[in-house]
Image 1 (cartoon, rainbow, N blue to C red):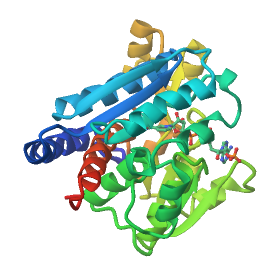
Image 2: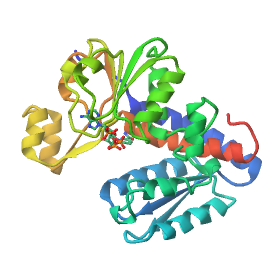
Image 3: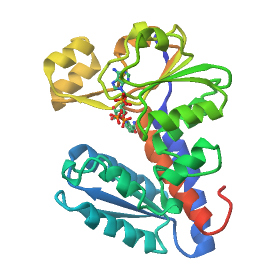
Amino acid sequence: VGARRLDGAGLAARLRAELAPRAARFEARHGRPPGLGIVLAGQRPESEIYVRNKLKAVADAGCRAELVRVDEHATIDECRRVVQRLNDDEATDAILVQSPLPPGMGADAERRLFESIASAKDVDGFHPENVGRLVQKRPTLVACTPLGCIELLEREQIAIAGCHAVVIGRSDIVGKPMALLLLHRDATVTICPSRTQDLPQIAANADILVAALGRPGFVTRDFVKPGATVVDVGINVLTDAAEVARFFAADSPKQRSFAQKGSVLIGDVHPNVDEVAGAITPVPGGVGPLTIAMVLRNTITAAELRAGGAAA
Ligand code: NAP
């Protein structure tokens, strides 16, 4: 039978439908729609897709979405001037700098740019002030991917309080905020960086296992307690036939899709986890669409808060 599918794509569609009237109410009250500005440096194909999806979801819900492109070889100061322009723009409520930035901008470019975004417009929740507020469990804009994961767990009525949650990965973007959101909901949380010893044994204690490490199919069935809930945050593109064959049976839909397109998506979780997990997020169609829906929700929340009203 396999694990229950946690349908992120379906929930994302419902969330978008719920959020559109909130955007309309804001526009009726303030004479303009909530506005999101996305800064995209360079032309990485994956980033192009993510940005296109975010702009579309936000525009479809009745918000204003603006894309500002920055040249691949631009300096960080040029990027900061773009962010500053959006900071100063009254009709822009939310700003997102798409990561990763081109490597030429330097190792700390992401942090420097994220902290140049006005904290009230920081739709990704990466600004140190918003991260601090999250740590202290104060209301704030929270990173969209972990926020989407929590929304899915709650709407699917997966119990969080009192459970043991293991988060594999500790990035500022996913792992750390995910761990904090679970902790704030009274889970006992274990965070695993790459030097963790005995990772499979630790993971196999989890009632909720979050895989956010960026390694295709790394989390195999021996990492998973029977019946556990598995949240697969990873998005990895396989283009090598031998690698695809390592994960997917010859006659499987993934293999057919690979034969047609020359690439296939896989998460950080191995397909054989399906045999032991109680519930699991698919890739694609799990966490990814929820991240996009949360960009929309945070855009509207930022607009409401900037306008002085309580976020609904
Ligand atoms: P990242 O910045 O590369 O961080 C990866 C984290 O995983 C690091 O903390 C690293 O530990 C840890 N790690 C790597 N190998 C490990 C191992 N063998 N055992 C334990 N921990 C290990 O990646 P990220 O930005 O968090 O993204 C993670 C994955 O999620 C990627 O596949 C990415 O594409 C995906 N993602 C998806 C969405 C979405 O919307 N669905 C959004 C964002 C990211 P160290 O700190 O010790 O190096």
